[in-house]
Amino acid sequence: GAVVSQHPSWVICKSGTSVKIECRSLDFQATTMFWYRQFPKQSLMLMATSNEGSKATYEQGVEKDKFLINHASLTLSTLTVTSAHPEDSSFYICSAEREDSYEQYFGPGTRLTVT
Amino acid sequence: GIQVEQSPPDLILQEGANSTLRCNFSDSVNNLQWFHQNPWGQLINLFYIPSGTKQNGRLSATTVATERYSLLYISSSQTTDSGVYFCAVGDTNQAGTALIFGKGTTLSVSS
Image (cartoon, rainbow over all chains, first blue to last red; front, side):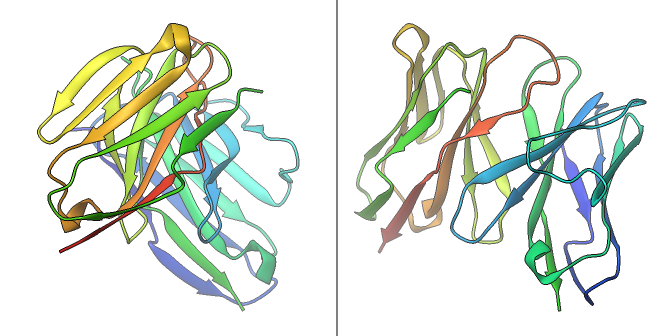
C-alpha cells in the first residue's frame, strides 16, 4: 500500500510553453500533498503545500503565478509550470501524506527539460 | 526554521561492511523519516521514526528525540544499497506539515 504515481515521468518542452504534472495517491486518500524540486546532486527543496479544496501554500521565493497548483480531489494534485524557461529544468517530486498518519510517500518524480 | 545535518556526506564501502549514518536536527520534531533515493530518483521509504528504534531486515534506525539525532544502521551492505540516503523531519504535530530534508549521505558499495 501507500503508492504515489506521477505523470509524466519525463518531459521535454520548448521555452514559453506550459507543462502539467500530475500526482496521484493510488491506494489512500491524501488531504495534503507536497511539491518538491531537486537539482542535480542536491537535496529536495519544498516548493508548495497543496491542500484539497483550498489554495496552495507556497514557500518563499516560489512564484505562485508560474507554478500553478490544483488539488481537485483527495487523490490528485497537479503542478503546472507556465511559460517554462530553461532555468525551470529540474526534477519535480510530489509527496502525499496519509490521512491516518504523518508519514509521507513520494512519487517517482518528473524530469523536466526546457529547451 | 529547523536545520537538518547529515553525516558523513559521502561513504564508500566494500560489500559486506556495516555503516552508520547520522542525522542531527536543531529543534524538536514530531516526524522523522529516512529515505533511500535510487539512481532513477525514486525516494523509497525506509523508516518513519520520530522516536525509538525500528528494524527492517539489514536496516535499523534509532531516534533519540531528546538529544535531537537519529541514526540509520546498514549491516552487511550490498551493492544495491548504493544511492543517496536522506533524513527528513517535520517540526509540528499537525497534519499537512512539510518535511525538511538534510543534504543526504551518498553511499557507494563496491563488490
